[in-house]
Length: 114
Image 1 (spheres, rainbow, N blue to C red):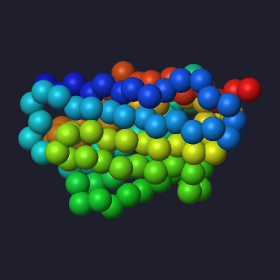
Image 2: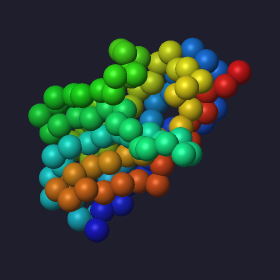
Image 3: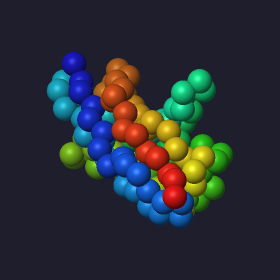
């Protein structure tokens, strides 16, 4: 069993930055993919960013260069640096890893508001 724990969420003003972290523990047999998703009530969960073991990245269309995903395979940790945050980025952000099975964290709330 794999446990994922997110941290780094909070309240930030528009234009501000946050850095999310997600650490995995448990029965990990290699991490093939690490990703961040987000969800607001009443809407489907959407991909924010993903990174493969080899370092290839993919971002949701709304990111537009504002966020950067990075991973530390040695620490089983994935990060999401979010800059130029907008009120519409307000959501609960979830970590997802394939280790090799898919596991999810419980999420961390990000609120962008003045």
